[in-house]
Structure formats: structure tokens, C-alpha cells
Length: 476
Image 1: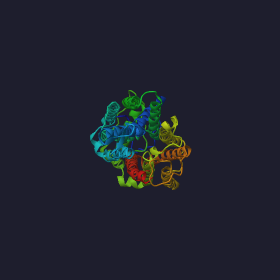
Image 2 (image 1 turned 60 degrees about the vertical axis):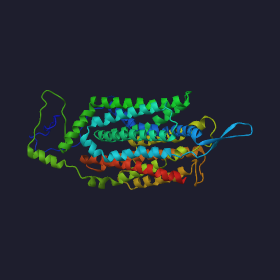
Image 3 (image 1 turned 30 degrees about the horizontal axis):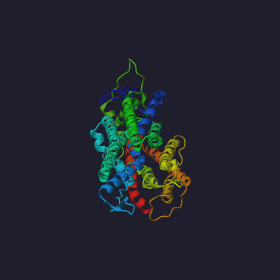
Image 4 (image 1 turned 45 degrees about the horizontal axis):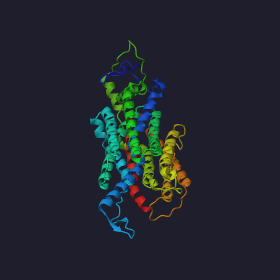
């Protein structure tokens, strides 16, 4: 048979062909110069810029709050007394408030992903894909610009600065959640390798943020100007992401897959050949009976039926992110170096916590392109995922300061760095395997449902891990 890419409402199946069988298409248009892959890599990177740039800047924001708080305290909560040599000494009348910034930043960054994943079915039916993706990127860009402007704004009220920062984090990650959910559905229309490329881009977003912070600290600029330059960087990154999305429909492979999805959903047959464009290309028709038969065979399984097939992968992705977010960054960002003097003490967390984590997380995601062990039906896979729980006590026993209950078992920087490398490598590897295995466990017609379910459980794991971070940090 032959099919033409007819408009909606017109048939694709020829009435002259009584028996139609289908396998995967063999004449898929080539991705010229890997542009589709490059654009989806950029889109993946852009989805996690909000989370990673605020997370990596947590020390800067905490320090700014401490400095503003001290200044406010000196103006209102402190008294003075005279020493014998007539010099003024400040005496604290009240302790500084502890905001648990890292915990709240993590929680308010991940909770929107869970909320908007639950709202996806409502949003997808009423808001077009273009508005969801392009609109989210525009609002993320505006919020990053606002954040950069606020670097130059003095806020002496510590509570006000904390509230504005938390509100910005909530809204920017809410738009990021809409963006991520929409792009996961979009990348699902493409061959499997593009999902890996997209997730590799997500993994590199943290490295991008960590390098930007290191460059800001290495500059000779004053801290305020360095912070301004740091927050301008994601503005540029988000703008490039928006341009990449706008250019994507112009590529050959992408419109082909958009139309292919319509064909597969409308007519669940087993072999489709798409002709090259030509003057004699025929528009094909089908009988009402055959259309009804095709529509019936194209009916998707229920969400519960799909979940029964992928529940192991859903558990794995939830558990991986629960373990990861329960200690990173809420616990790991408070680890102190054994060599605090000099420049190393100034960049220790940026290198050994953020840069090491994000590079190894990206390596873990990327290596799944060549290595896929254990298999999707292996019992070893969930066992290895559960074994990652050992990283929680290992990181809590590093040189975390302030600490109240646990002793320091691993004070050397090298041990902390090694634990972080294995922790992040396993996180990226198992997350990428879980997300790519799930659609393979269901029929092709149910792959999109499986992807949506996995996105929900991914968000659930992030939110549960962020909530647990409050408890685990208090137990150190």
C-alpha cells in the first residue's frame, strides 16, 4: 500500500488493500547533520536550568541572607556597650533566625513538577503544545531577568528577601515543570536515541551551572557583579533554548514523526510505507467498516493496565530520586573541606559537590547509549536501585557542619568526592535506564501513556526526596 500525509479528517489507508500488516518504517528520513539531536540536547539542558542555577547559587543566596540579617540585626536587635578602651562592641540580643534555605529551595523546586504532572491531562487538552513550551520558556526567561535585577536590589529585611526568593523559585520551577512534561511527550514521538540525547542534555544542565558559578567566583569582580553575571548566563541559555524550539519544526525528521504519530493512533496497522513526494501521489480512501475496525484496534490500554506492566520501572525511578534528593543538596552542600584556607576553601563545594555530581550524573545518563545492564526484566535491576540507600548514611557521616548528633567518619575531601562520584553516577545511570525501559514493556500504542506515568513517578520521587531532606538534615 501507499499512504499520503493527508490532512486531518482524510483517510490514509487504501480501500484496495484488504490485508494490511505493519512493521517499523524502514525509510525514515535522515537527521541531517544531527540537528534534531542537537536541538533536543539543548531543549533538555534548558528544562533544568531553573533548578540547577538556583541550587548551585544556594551558598551565595544563604550568604546574602546572613549578611543582610546581620545588618538588620545590628540596626534593630543589638545593643551596644562600652569597653574600657571606649571602643564600641556589638552584643547580640537575639539569635539569628534559621531558614533551612537549602531544604525549602529543594522542596519548592520539585513540588511544582509533581503538581503540574497531575494537571497535565487537563492542560494538554486545553492548551496547545506550542503555547505550553514557548510560553513556559518566555516566562522562565522573564523570571531569570527579574532574579538578575534583584541582585542589585538591597533588601535589608531578611524575611522579605527569603519570601521573594522562594516565590521566584516556585514560579520559575512551575513553568519548568510544564516545559519538562510537554517536552517529554514531544521527544516520545522520535526514535529512542533522542530520549537518551534529551536526558543527557538535562544531565549537563547542572555542569553548565557549576562551571558558570566557578567562573563567576574566579573573576576579579566584586561578589555582587559576579552574582549578576552568573544569573545573566541562564537568561542567555533560556533564550537559546527558545530559539531551538522555534527552529525545530523546520527540520525534516520532526514533522515526519508528528504526522506518523497521527497515522499510528488513527490506524493501528502493522506496516506503513510513506512515499516520496511526487506529482502522482494518490490520496487514499477507506471504507467506514475498515476505519471502525482500525479505530477499535487502536484503542489504548487503561492507565491501570499500563501501570501493571511498568510498575517495577516506576518504583525504580521513584526510589532513585528519593534517595538522591533526600541528601543532595540539602546535606551535601553543608560539607566542609579539611583544607579551609586559601582558594580551595572558597570553591570546595562548587567543585566537589556540584561539579562532581553533575559531571558524573551526565556520564551515567550518557553511558546508557552503549551499556544497558541489567536488562529490563532482570531482578538484579531493582535490587541495585534499592542498594543505593547506603549513600544516605555515607554522606551524612561526612564532614557536614553544623551537626548535632552523628560523628564525623569521613573528614577527608577525597573520600567525600569519591562518594559523591559514585552517588551521582549511579543516579544518572539508573534513572535513564528506568525511563527508557518503561515504554519497551508495553505495546507501541501505549508507549505515550507509559511515558506520562513515568514522568509522574519521577516527579513523585523528587518531591518525596525533597521532603525527606528536612528530616535527614536535622538528624546529622
